[in-house]
Length: 189
Image (cartoon, rainbow, N blue to C red; front, side, top):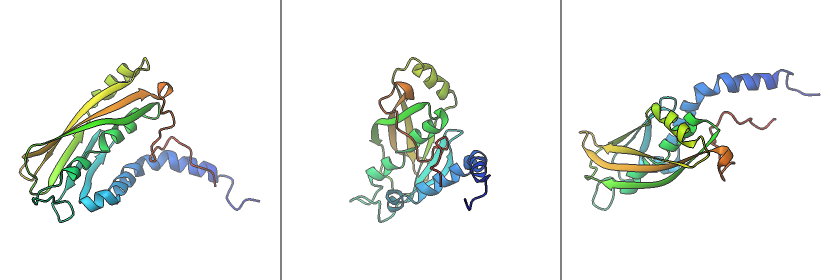
């Protein structure tokens, strides 16, 4: 005899279908903003809209992220941009695709002496381009660039990221999945 109502599984499926899409951006933002390396570096996700392919991330200058000369630490500047392009692509392309960060390059333009902000955007037309390039099973490498600016909108650093994208059926990484993936059934109680 089960203590759970017969329709509990139906309620779980309904909640997952209707509630999780609403909660995912909030849960993701909360998780990123409580992620220990980000908390320690003073990095904060200000805005996350995976559907629109937009993330805005900021970092205040504080004792935990100052380098030896008192400016923003380069590793923290890079960390501001690290997961966001991958997250946006995984979300927009869905579970039929595998997405990995392939490489990154940081160009330090000026010292960061104040709060800095990165606006990471993927154009809506990009998904169609990726799908066309990946349709034959080939690996697709796409490059994205984010400028990190200070409070006066002066460029402090430019981060260029290359991402690997491939249809899951052709990938050696078939098991890759997101912890935030709502298409995967949770384990039954």
